[in-house]
Image (tube, rainbow, N blue to C red; front, side, top):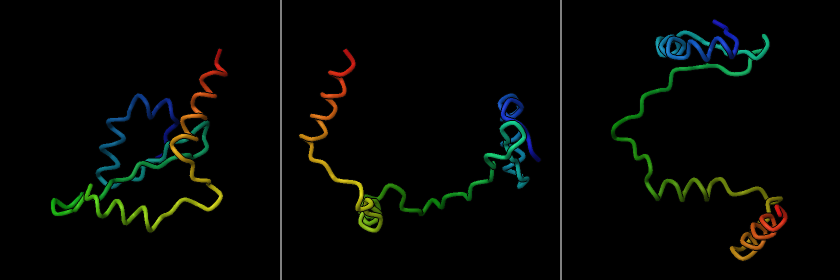
Length: 88
């Protein structure tokens, strides 16, 4: 099933129920498909979500790209101050 954004906004609850039932629901912008609603697999009660060790390991396994320079706290604070000063 495909619906446009405006229709999806008015029928969201119904579309979510259809997706939960396994139907493919595509939301389009001016007729062009942009997103799909799909049912999410249930999370096991035994899942270790939010475990600090898992989060740290994920960060180690997925480092920032080399082109993204890591900045110090002072550099970030200076950048924020500079941006705020430019608002006046």
